[in-house]
Length: 130
Image 1 (tube, helix red, strand yellow):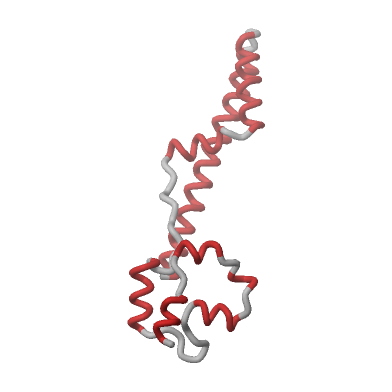
Image 2: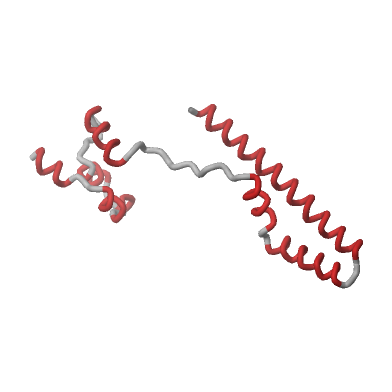
């Protein structure tokens, strides 16, 4: 029976195709070859970690300064303002063009500062939770 249960254990590819939320608790426990009373043994945990890795989400690398700036400038409204500024420049309206560009730059600077502070706060929370 033990060999049969180990044969029934799912591989990573099979894990992805299973709709775990649709299964009953007993079916999930059966497929994972465990019980709700005892759980997994330390050796089984170690074995599964070697196969599947730790039960952790992958962290995205922190955005660079240029990525933060680009993220601020890719909004449709900001692109529209930049186009309006260029058109104003072409028409010789230097003051209007400069004012629009100043607002766009100020918006980008404030957005980058806010985004950086949010990332730092999140990093501090993660550090406290660890």
